[in-house]
Image 1 (cartoon, rainbow, N blue to C red):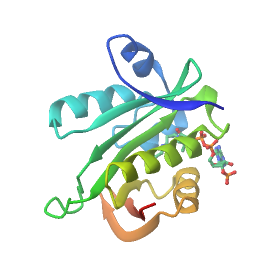
Image 2: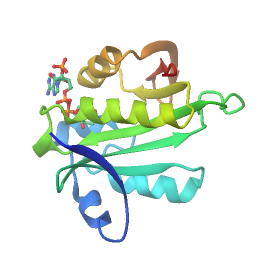
Image 3: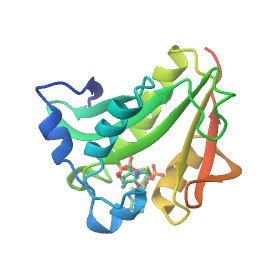
Length: 161
Ligand SMILES: CC(C)(COP(=O)(O)OP(=O)(O)OC[C@H]1O[C@@H](n2cnc3c(N)ncnc32)[C@H](O)[C@@H]1OP(=O)(O)O)[C@@H](O)C(=O)NCCC(=O)NCCS
């Protein structure tokens, strides 16, 4: 596995938009679509808050994408210093279960740590047990808070070094 992130450009955005999760996983996203990346690109454009959509490549194959925002905390916008927020992670249905989701999360954590982030937050639907297990195994702790329509908010404390 040789995973890497690449920014979305004119050369790869069609491919990014075409990636999809399985129909039953559309419920993982508040807009209930199995093709979530067009929404991530739209939100990054509309909110102009430094959000970044990153394509996840294994060698030359785009296998998924994630969408994160440095220095933001939607649960408490006044308290954003040193925090980053992962809004969305998806691995295309053809490439799930191969370790790409876990590896991409480990790479994101390392990336934001280098950016000076000390807390990485995210939320997930309570019935999304695959995501929950993945996030908790990486050290995320449920905050006891929810956002949106009952999405569980979890935070990872990121140390230095
Ligand atoms: C959640 C998601 C990103 C995980 O990506 P992935 O590449 O399939 O995950 P990995 O192969 O790295 O596996 C991570 C863990 O989940 C487990 N897992 C993956 N798919 C699973 C499935 N369908 N059922 C049960 N466990 C599963 C793996 O066994 C692994 O556990 P381990 O590391 O303890 O062995 C992917 O399934 C996905 O895109 N789902 C739909 C969208 C979503 O839920 N996004 C996250 C919330 S925004």
